Length: 559
Image 1 (cartoon, rainbow, N blue to C red):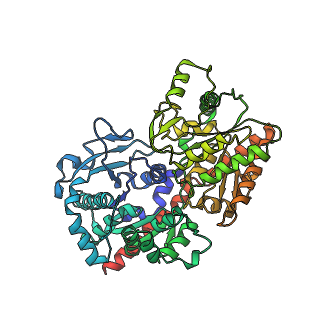
Image 2: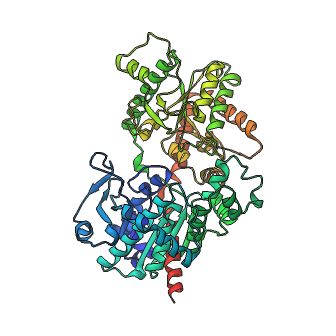
Image 3: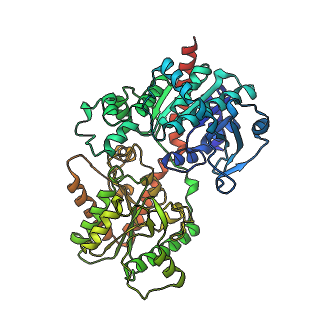
């Protein structure tokens, strides 16, 4: 009932004919933006109904269909078959198989490649976007973004919507060219641009430079030239300036935008979570037990030791960015834990669950799992073989630790696959595996928001994160900073305190290991309670504020 009341109370609801949101991750799970979109969709859909339309790339085929796209050709007045699109573009219309089941338009954007040079010229003349030295994924991103803008414009006309009541929301630099194209060709529409992480900030960190120690001295344009990021940075900075409302996901990134993009976001829109993703009661218990049994079996075969049921299972996950996501810090702190902070010799299984360049499942492990083999003493640390095992940072570090015989009773293993339930070894999806963990550690150096720790506490798994994550700062601002009190421990991470962080994480885990059953249960309940405060029903209000600002600024701009 509360949802229906909310629907009437949202001021912008009556002012919007169509609400488009464009992202490379619509029906296409690559990173955290997928989680943002797929978990907030129900809140938006219950207010705007089928006026909410997500636009994503049609990168699928009959042999490799999207697992979450349900085609419905009659939606949007049969637009997929009746809408006439320029440039040879084609679309498929359907629903996204997530809570809320919003309408999705998937775009075959490849015909736009032939027009990119002309578009780049136009955007240079109109807005000063410097695409001259673009490389990598720039062309593909811009082709999709412009195609999405054209589809939004065509649907606005086809559905007879009032362009002054259209909001087009573009996520990340990869869609910035679409925002600019829409502003140039349908200027009546209101536009929103959200950066989830600045391209230049991520690049500074990814290149091993200290972001925080010299933060006030960085100039985004100068660093873009130094790091060969001119095109992406120019596009992102221009989209942020030209949008009718510029937003970002945390106070951490808002500060970064002000310094590196010279644009301060008008609204901070924190990332919430959809609790319906979390199983409850008996279903949760079944998934926890099944996940633990599978993980302990795999680990026992890989280490040559039978790990008991009370083994503490710790995990980290997310994007494979060795320094930015703190994978180096996780590995070193787990090694420290095993060597200096585990006097009772408790068994600990520490899992690095980040996708890498997978070649195939580990053949020997696969055979052992199939035939329940335990004869040979295994000594591997990889569930899947990689194409670049001699160069992958995680792989190299774990191999060196294994050769040196380090880590004590802490067994460090690398699960380098996408946990989609069909990887050939684990065969359990990430969300179904989360309940199996006892603790997670996400010691990020660069993390605009931090969905992984939020997901962890939503599944009642206490977590350790840093103040360099937007989620970590949110916790510090709203809760008492300890696992016992809120299920989250936030550590202060700087450019110069790496080894202090190693020690703090190790001692925090060691302390948690000594918790009795009652204390552990209370910590898990506290984690869940913290996640409830990050429910989208609270955070979605910031989006309504952004919609109102965009509509207001678009009208002022037109006048």
